[in-house]
Image (tube, rainbow, N blue to C red; front, side, top):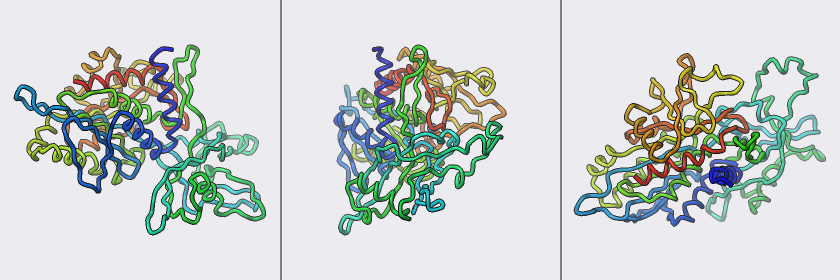
Length: 435
Ligand SMILES: [Zn+2]
């Protein structure tokens, strides 16, 4: 099998095991630990040393890993010049389960009360098998402990209204998330309609339902990622935005050895809701970790600032490929295609951080790695999405480029991308981290 197919299969397995941001971070932790990385806790003091490999999590949903060069001086010259960082995000748009979620319908059905997390294409969540996964907070004596849970069953469906009941269905429908998007959960039995979801969660988590005092639970689609197309050119999977980049960067990270820069792999939660949480890109998480690592290495504040001035950030979040049915939606001259390699994103208003210098650096990395790259810009009359780069650089002001892998149907319940592009990303990221 071609290397890029193996890589895509491994990436799709990673996504399948990662129904929520919490699971994604757990799986990244496993990849790091298998590569010899050691966990640091933010609430403890840190002992870090040259040649050290560490990671830190915040809220179980964001993670930052660092790989420090082994020597500080070579022939009397300081080795460490700064940080080489890649950032991606762990979260994807989904329905979040509300508190007290069960709702009875005419004493016959039980449905779940949910709300939107992020901006998904609502219709794509209908008529497919769904389940529930996330994090629970459980009372354990006097303590509260957290754990992950995934109800590994085909559990729920959000049924469409039949075409006979809405003849205008194919002319475009406005969906009301409080009415149209609530998933059918069970048939009402003997009037019992409360607490059933928590009981199921408790069973899967191996705890008592009454001890579950809090939860961050999301719906996820049960569809498994697959390779499709006449010649297996495409991949079809939930959560490609942005777990494709999260996986690629973690894989490249564990395969790289730093030379003159401290390598940093950051995966943030809450990008889909604006990043403004304690664990999002718009928090102190990255600056806190960089400060404590430099302090642990005995660097003065002025040395840290020197390092930051010589640092570089690649913000990696998927990009829109030209659409086969709507090629007119893409910019007239910047037209990325699936399997065309890494997409460098530009925006005059600086929602993307790419500038002449950072674009040149990214292009030269791709050249050195022998992988293709392409360019993206919004059409001038269209407001694009935002991402991590400019939010992170507001906290840690470093040179930065925005990139992504080309995909279709971003924020659909299942998205389409290229079978070759994950491998391209890993190759380029390894060049960056081994410079
Ligand atoms: Zn994204």
